[in-house]
Image (cartoon, rainbow, N blue to C red):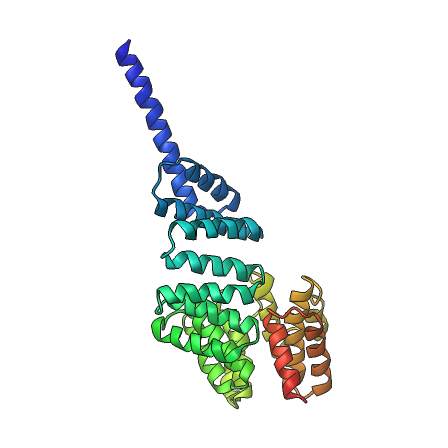
Length: 309
């Protein structure tokens, strides 16, 4: 009888241990936000984990909440995690990203700065803070961060992409072209279309029209590229003559302010580079009228209108 009881207890403990292991794995590596939240909640509720393990579980759950656009719960989790592990650079960076995902870029920047205070050579924090400075239209501090990030992470395509945005907003199209070439060199399809969509006009505006034409000749319709990358592909196909203005403009209101500003800028840019200044201005004004300031379409339209004065 005693052996039977021991066997049962050991079996129960074994099942419980496997259950705990499964939750830990899902919490740290899961993809589905709801499953991650459930698994992390179980890990947090065990009560026997170390502060660093609990902080990691809270951070994973916070990321999952953010993926569900629940910034309030996400920030609660990150604040609790930081309280448990206050010298963990990644926790501040995670909180910074949650704030940015909620379009609270002004609040995100000092949190990224705290991550950098703990580790000044954190290339990801420099890249992200530079990104968020650009969302706010603050190009000079963005350039400082992104140039430093490039030194630290010379293969990071995100660094090159946002460095290109910064130079493009400045009107420094030669440097923008160099940055977007770095983006292209460090990207794989379908991410490459985002780099090419900015590299092409940068080359044209830098006076490298033959290089621009050669690049555009490589662009083909691809039904597998949809969503936001599809908007960039439409921009390139518009320049190539494979899309009409009406076809591209059909998606202007597909996602409200984001699509209006993003696609509006593409249409304005097409008119601008073909010498139709008034039509370009009309689209740029439409993009700016959305007041969706974090979007590159808004920021670039704003810059173009200043240059057209």
